[in-house]
Length: 146
Image (cartoon, rainbow, N blue to C red; front, side, top):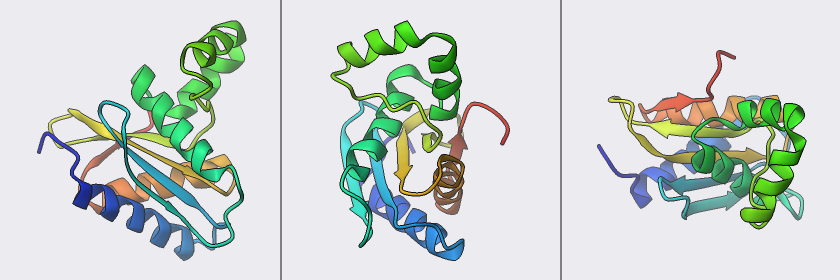
């Protein structure tokens, strides 16, 4: 597989929401982007707050834009705040450096896209994203062992 199809993206979003329900997460929003950073699927649970779609997209977009999970982006942002301020200026405020944005890789390691989850604490968002990717038999790349 070398492309993230609509069918896979919708399945990923559904798997993420199901994973969230299994662990009693707060209402979630899930964004799935292709390898070019384009939104393919977005699902927002009832009760998810107003900015959750933009946050989920920003987590996934940052992962695609910089080639690493948003957990690593959060660490980078703490060490290089000026770089991230400039980055968000260039990306029109599109990068959200907080865990919950995960690269989606095929079994050969090629990046197919990214999934971003927002709604609960960032560690839970990331856990849900990883579970969704693994449920569709793809590889979740957070960039570090969690």
